[in-house]
Each structure stands twice: as structure tokens, then as C-alpha cells.
Length: 227
Image 1 (cartoon, helix red, strand yellow):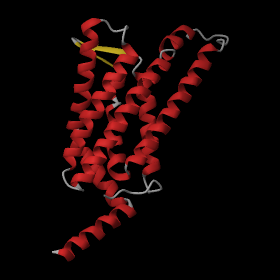
Image 2 (cartoon, helix red, strand yellow):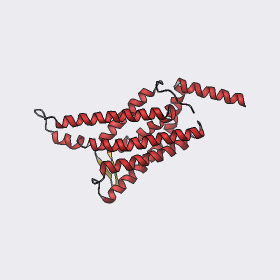
Image 3 (tube, one colour):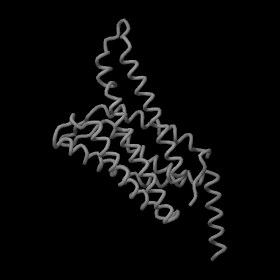
Image 4 (cartoon, helix red, strand yellow):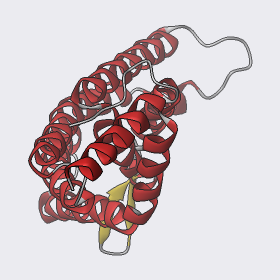
């Protein structure tokens, strides 16, 4: 089972994009959105891409790299929440009239951050763990199997934990159940629809990471020799 090293050519770039998606999604998630009977939050627009990047990291760089991405991403989220808290508690300057609006939106971020921390740490680590274990059994082939399997397990745990911690007691009754189901189905649907793109991204990363591509070449040579 092959993985590119953490000091590979593109890991730092993927990690930076991953952290940015988490920060933007968690701030956007402070707004509950309703499209008719469908209830979701603002994080739905971008957050599924965090799981897609998680799949890329797990497939190309391995479980240790995915775990590092989760830890770094949420360290940045904790830092953002702390900064927002300090800014909210600081007195407004002359001429600034939006203190209440600022606090109403970003003051909710710590709860969102906690929900995201609990949900995403469990969900993403399960996603990565399942993907790597399936890869260990199947090798490089059948990428779609490990993407679908890991996504289903990870997204279910993530969505359920996030919704309970972030919005239990805020979104009432059946609307909350609707919110959980829609969130899970939507995130999985986005990843399934974008699976061809995920395939291409993973293929490009494997080809362009020297250590990974060299391992693949050596394996193909060895297989040819055995034939």
C-alpha cells in the first residue's frame, strides 16, 4: 500500500485549502437556510469539498496526513473563535454601529466550532480510516468503492453529531429531523456527483508526487516481471 510522504510537493497546498474551507464553512453555517421544505445551513455550499479534499489526502498521503490536516484545521478554527470572542467583547469605536449584528452572527461561531470539532474529527477520521483500510484490502483498484464507503460512514457520523451539538433546541421538532436527513443526503450527493472530479484530482496528485509515482512505476515493473 503506497502513500506519498508528508513533505511531498503538494501536501502543504492541499492542507492550506482544507483549512480555508473549514473556516469559511463554519462561519457560513451560522445562518440557517430554508428552500421551501428543505432546511439546511450556509455551510452546505462549501463544506462537502472538505470531505472531498479529505479523500484526496487519505488516498494519496495516508491516514497520518489526514489526521494532521484535521488537527491543524481545527486549531485554526479554535484560533478564529477566540479572536471573534475578543473582538465581540472589545468596546465599539466611534462611528461603529454594527456591534449587535456582529455579535449576533459571529457570537454563535464558538458553538458551531464545537459542533464542527466534534462532528468533523469523528467523521473525517472515520472517513480516512475506512478509506485506508479498504485500500489495504483492495490495493490501487476500485477507488470508487473506498470513496463511497468512507463517505457514507464519515458523513453520517459528522452530520448527526454536528446537527445535535449545533442546533438541538434551536431548530424545532421535525424541522430538526429534516435538517439532519437533508444534510446527510446532500453532502453524500455532492460527493457522488463530483466523484469524477475527485478521481481526476487523485490521479493528478499521484502522478505528480514523485515518491508516489515512482512506487507505482516500480510496482508495474514488478508485475510485468512476474507475468
